[in-house]
Image (cartoon, rainbow, N blue to C red; front, side, top):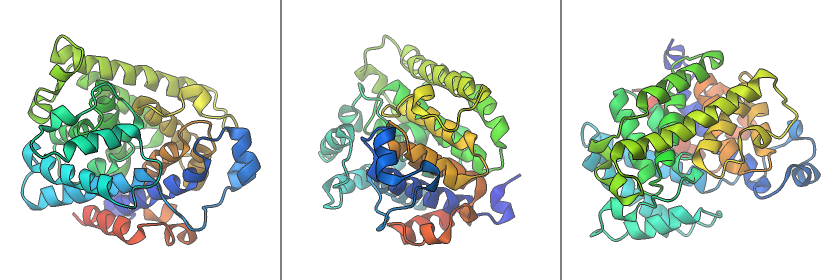
Amino acid sequence: MNIRAGGKQAGVGAMIGLAIGDALGFPTEFNDVPQILAKCGPWRAMDLPTPAIVTDDTQMTLALGRGLRTARERGPLAPARVVRPVREEYVEWWRSPDNNRAPGRTCLVACEKLSHQERRWQQASQTGSKGCGANMRVAPVGLMPGLPEEARSGVAQLQAALTHGHPTALAASDLTAHAVRLLAHGTRPGELMDMLREYARKSRSVYREWWLGDLWEFAQDHSAAEFTERGWDECLAVLDKVDDALRVPEPEADPCTFTGAGWVAEEALATALLCFLLFPDEPVTAVRRAACTSGDSDSLACLTGAFAGAYLGADAWPSAWADRIEYHDELVALGLLWDAS
C-alpha cells in the first residue's frame, strides 16, 4: 500500500513531524529527565513551545531538501549532480546568521572546509565522526519518489559523508532514509525492524564507490569492504537493542537507557525507532517521549517525528502545532512536491 495513494501526504507529514519533534526537544536538550519534568511537567502533557523554534536539525534537513530539489531539476540523480547543490546549501547554512541553534562541531568544521571550492569534498569529510548530524537531516532522501534502491542508498550516504565520513554515519543515514521510505509506503510498524535488519545485512559489504569515490582511503581501514562492514555491523548491533527493548516495553522509562543517548548516528536511529514503535499510532505521544530523554532530545524527537509523519501522514499532527512551526511554509512546500510526484 502506498500512503500517498491514500491522500495522507506522507511527505508533508514527515517534514512537519520532524520539525515538531525538533522544536519540542530543543528546550530539553542537555537536560536529564528529572530536569525536564521539573521544567515541562509530565512528559505525556508536554506542549510545543511558543514560539515553536527549531534547531539546526530542521535547518539542515531543509538545506538537503533544497539541494536535492535543485539536483532533480537538472536531471537524473548522479554523484556530481547531487554534490554541487547540496554542498552549496550546506555552506549557505553554515554562513547563515540563523545558524545559531547550537549546531554540531562536525558540521561546522566540515562546512567550513566545503566552502573552499578547490577542495574535493572527500577532503572536507570528517571520517572520524559518526555524530547524529549525519542522519538527523536525511528524511528527504527517503521521501523522494522514483529513486532506485541503489540511488537512494548512494544519496543517503553521500549527503552524510559531506560532513560525517565515519562508516557508521553512512550506514545509519542509509538505514534512516530506508525506514522513512518503508513507512511512507505503508510498511506496518510490526514489520519494520525485520525489514531494516534484512536491508542492513544485504548492504553490509556494499561500498557505494560511484557515490563515495575514494572516501574510505581517508579512514583507518585496509579496504573499502572493511570500511563499510565496520559501519553496518555497528548498526546491526544497535537494531538488536531496539528489539530487546520492545520485548518487554517500558514506555515510562527513559528510552536512552535501552538504546543509547543518540549523540551518535546509530544510537539516534535506534532510540528514535524505539520511541516511534512504542507508540506507532500516537505520534504526539511518540515525539513527547523522545523529547523527554536524557540524550540528544531534539535530534531524537526530530527523527521520531519523521518516522511517525511518514507512516501516518499530515493528519498525524494537531493543526495548532503544525501551523505555527518555524519554516512551516517551506516544509509543506517540499513535502507537497514529493507527495505530488
